[in-house]
Structures are given as C-alpha cells and as structure tokens.
Image (cartoon, rainbow, N blue to C red):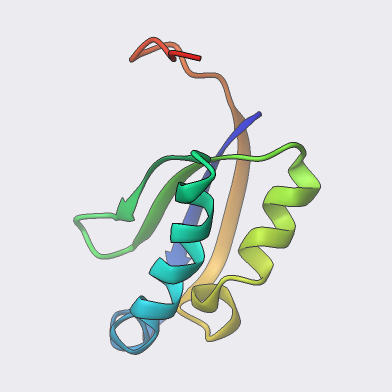
Length: 93
C-alpha cells in the first residue's frame, strides 16, 4: 500500500537538514533498492518534505518515519501519514 508522508520542518529545520541529509538519503536508498519509493523530495517553499512510499501497513510507514534521521534529529517538527491511491501515472506492476 502506498502512503503519502509529509514532514513539516521545525524552526531550525533548514540548518538541521544540511547536517542530516546524507543519513536521511541513505535511509531512503534502502527502500529505493526495494522499489518502494514512488517519489521523495523537499518542498520548494522550504517548509518540509513530501514522500510517497510503499509499505505493507501503516504501522510499517510509522516505524520507518520514526526511525528516519530527519525525525530523530528534529528536522521534522510534525509528520502526517496518509494512505494513498495512485491513479496517474498508471502504476506498472
């Protein structure tokens, strides 16, 4: 199942993001190798990040984001997780 994860940066998010970016990307690379990353990146208005990731359950999505360096080190002040149904582009299995 796909999940939209929106991480909202805290007051020092931009500065902390620079410090913890490599570890955050390494965390995502593990999922990308498993073809679970649909898309991921920072919001252009510098308020946070958007990730669309595939997990077996919401609990797995919550566990992943709790253990992500951006959450652990306070880049993300708040995180929203929503189940997502992809319509376009048409998913190819």
